[in-house]
Image 1: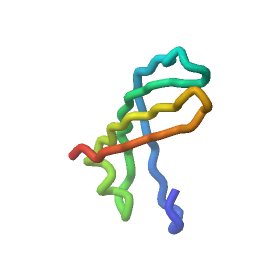
Image 2: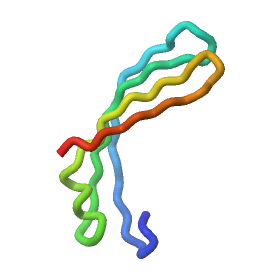
Image 3: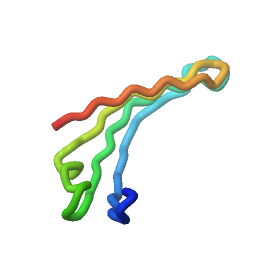
Length: 68
């Protein structure tokens, strides 16, 4: 939700697996956004793809890219 009250919804999908080391996981995902007219409307043409990994101690590293 934006400060001006506009909002958007998102839908995400991903695949992942435990690494076998403590709390470690490795995931790959995509997120699509749906927004109405207004300042958030440019999000309608964007797909976010990303990688999410955590190590045995639970330290998290997430990287995302915008795919137009």
